[in-house]
Amino acid sequence: MVVLGAFRGNVRDDLSWLNSAGRPDPTQTFYRANLPRLPLDDVPALTSGVMTLVPVYLYEGDLVTNLTFISGSTAVVTPANQWTALYSPAGALLAQSADKTNAAWAADTAVSFALATPYRATKPGMYWVGINVTAATVPTLVGTQAARPVLTGEINLAQTSGSGLAGVAPATIAAPAWRRQVPLVVVN
Image (cartoon, rainbow, N blue to C red; front, top):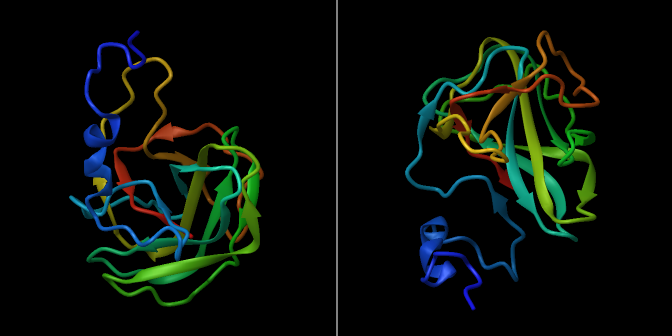
């Protein structure tokens, strides 16, 4: 009997590159991310007032308290709104961070956004993490470039939603549009 179709190897070996970044001890630190730590680069993943979303797989029982993004070589200039949000696999808002409004965000700096209400995943699945920065100049983010989905059932590795957003996350992900630049997000 062949369980994995034509694949004959060890699944853990085939996916080992995903764990090449030396992740923290899972018994000590809860941690999820949408990308491995390498190879990453400086990407223009944000547009002012437009939410950028990336999928992150959560397991049942995962407790999400913080969403962290890392700026690249460009710092934020004259920010008005800065927040993150967690959405269900179906695109419904589950939790949002406080709006950091005009807080500084320097280049090459990790910024954690604490959710106003921590969320415990009730079922495993691909959840969506959104970030919005409304500013004269938005920061670039550490991330990568990705191709558009090709096969039926593939999801976007990054997408945008909304425009002219201010301090409150939309209740749902509306009219998502594929985005080539995929920012790294660390969920803990």
